Image (cartoon, rainbow, N blue to C red; front, side, top):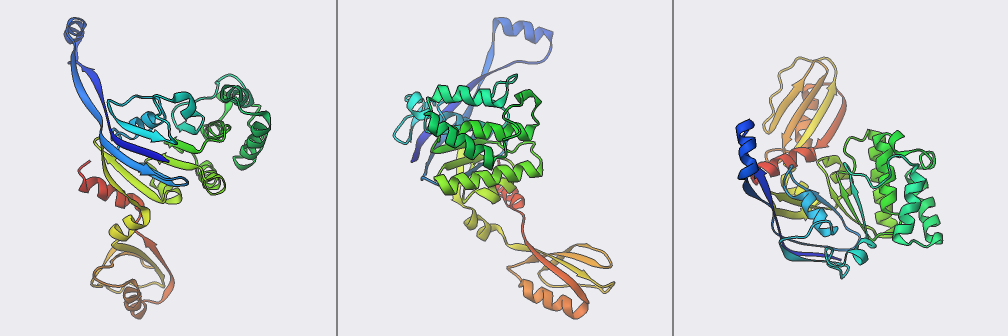
Length: 325
């Protein structure tokens, strides 16, 4: 469905020293540096996949999305999406894709949301029957009924993002590019957006490429992760494989009756402790969680136990350190 081969993209950036003298000098002689945003990027994505495209700021995530959505032209390389080259067959290409940039808007600021939707209907030449059906689905699943007749400038950030996603899906695209879609959203709005993405992926087989710094979005949605750093694709794997490799610890929280007894367990380190609560990190290479619980139950009167996996955020931070990005 999506095939990217050896993409490269560089930008020429002007630079100068601070101060008035340097500013005047820059009018006569400008100095430039070359920033290599993408270096030999290649990957393939099949229909119905949800892919988390992650990396630190400046890694090349947004540049990749802009190239495969047809906004930017690469210096070299190939890209085929449903048989179209994004920057060469833009009219055909955009009919198959929806794009949401969390910090950009395709809705008109001073008019009601429904006016923007109807304008997009005319731009994409959506048949009235299809438009009405899609609008009803989007209104229901994204809870937009009370927002359609409100000017965009009066919407909260979460409300606007939901409307942006709705606008991107009016023309029934087969691929959805989401660049930081949940940035700045509250918990309720995030869950609503995540549930909607799951729904359209399951029911309509919409392929989703998600770039975000919020690892909870990745964990909730993506079944595959691609890591980019300094313009290079460093890792392409499933989330389950990543967890298997890097989740070498589990977090064990014990609620117990009042006790000050000294606790020392090989393979388990105490992260925090009070008279009635203890949190430990269990190294699975050295011991089992069940063994640790057995030792603790012999020393403490346990009231409640919870076991958690290592947070995905910590795994991603470790990846960043391993790849020095």
